[in-house]
Image (cartoon, rainbow, N blue to C red):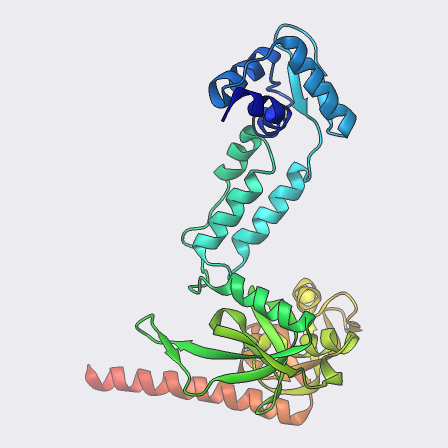
Length: 336
């Protein structure tokens, strides 16, 4: 590129360099900026020109601070994201199970570009992606984008749905799916689509198990249950996104589990003291083996009080587990 063209871009080169290299503890001097322009962009300039360009950037609104002295220079004081905000976003990417390891690393690299190289080095030391449970579907980004586009255009979608085999390969279900998408939500670190299906009614799909999503010409089927505030209410009822009949369930928990209940059901849940050590509450959940297992997992510190049907389902689940382990123990004794 001719030097005359580089002269026009000089101020942008300075801005990019300050964004990447400048830091409160590592200000960039005029000499460093001049060397960068000459060696990286074949552009010659003097100190007066650098001062003028920095001043123009300050007038434009870039928060550039000038540090006086021999070791002084310039650094960008405020950026699009403060460091604690970037750390929060990176933590969210790290912990998100529906993002693949590759996508997680790519996102973290992009977020690190929003700060200086010095802060980026500090953040990368704490980044742990490998070894975490992550999605294996690289197309999830495009799935989310296609679903959001369909919602915005009020159109139905078709897609293929698959299960994972024990060999780690996809097992596509025989028929393709068609549904009216209404919202995306995250639960148990996985992303789900809430939709109205002609075959299954109001239901949910794991976004990382969807593929080949296409927008249909047909408009979405009306679904009051997934419109407006009802969408959030329905998402809350689908406890951990496992299929089950929505039921009002009364439970009795030990006070030690207060944080667990609030984290699971939100601060709006009404907790009523029951003696010195317990409290009771009622919540609408989709009764499923996963919900019952969640309650059973707390042992004697959690109890279902109502309705009787749910108590019986929980009792049956416990008996099935006991029978399975009892038969296993008997078989081992017979083999010895």
